[in-house]
Figure 1: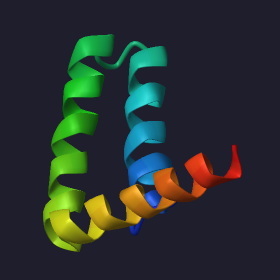
Figure 2: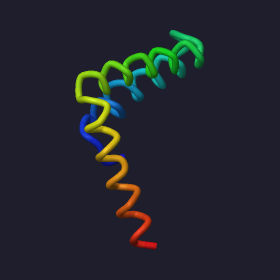
Figure 3: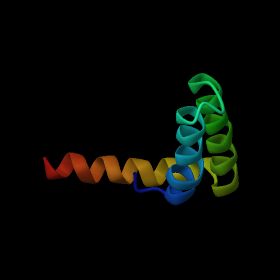
Length: 66
């Protein structure tokens, strides 16, 4: 995933949510609901248009490589 904030999405949020679920601290659903809420906050902080445009550029680049 090559978008602004990728480390926040994956390392901070996703890794923490998965760890909570695997450790039995939260149900998988609750852990992923928490990840989704954090991702919304990250997107709001970075800017939805900025994240969307970066993602579109990556998809277009990958499509051109095939």
